[in-house]
Length: 440
Image (cartoon, rainbow, N blue to C red; front, side):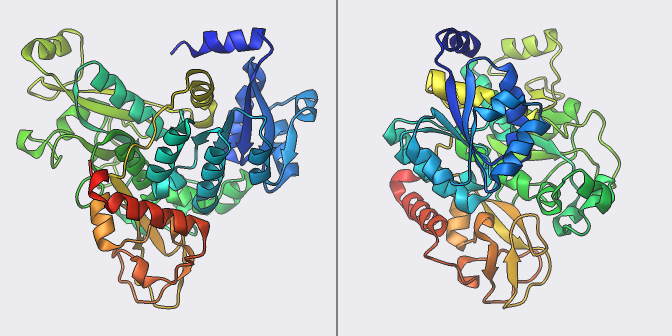
């Protein structure tokens, strides 16, 4: 993309790319660790509910005192964006309710926005990305996180003339994990609660990685950014290693497990009996492609590509991702090239709150990774038809009806606060994508 040359020129001219970071948690800290070694990139402002904690995060990742001294630390992200003076805002709170408000404010102020907050992106990114394009600003996925890296592989495949059969990521999964709670999560990670607390690890956040919610959110983001479709009944999480991707992730008619070509899916690093998968892709991303002709299929064989038995399906993958350590790519692409590293293009996938156990009317839902619900991937049209409650709005809302275990929670089942900005934005998006013109 030639970003580095552009960045070097900005550094030499004394015109750095100026960033405003919202949220100095784990992802934000990983990004901050790369700033001192990236000439031409400047974090002008960090907005965090705990500014002193944000300063501490900067020290913890190796910022020198003089860099901390010249950085502004505030507790009001909205005021930061209204004040201007930054080229790109990074939304890294992980809170979908405030994330939507922050994104819309960045767009309103003509500032490029990098949405680390995949929860917010899935909740209403289809609407916000469209608003950003009309305003002439970039609305981007976060490079280093799996959705953007997967979209990059899909872009590579399509630009080189291959049909995308499947795309997604790997994770550690067993069906029983859907019922995991913050009280049981550390058993699955091989840690004691004390060890996790000492490392500053949030049990509810890490549980959302385990119970299937985060996988559903990331696959919805990929579907919405590429036009690929979710499985009709939710993710299947087939066990598959790097060598087996093209064999497993091909259509049923060809011996695989896909309903159709052009699907998102997550592969598990565990067999269903708990045995580890050989050469698993737990930390990586992949795309499965099909050779368009016999010549291309022969090239797969000649150049050592892993293929299925027919030789026509193959896979390209990236075994690891570095999360916030790679975020500069998104920031610089937005500021220097005016291009996103993946962006929501429509509303193909949604994530609906689903009961972890039998829930009773009067109970309070506690959102992703909690004790009450997990997030299940749905095709967007099915979610709209159902009236499913998005997982991003399933926090601190009271149930009005009993919900059996493993059943979806609907808008009509909860006391939703219709005055909340995030609820209004989501309702706007639902209304927008119900229109025939949006059903591409």
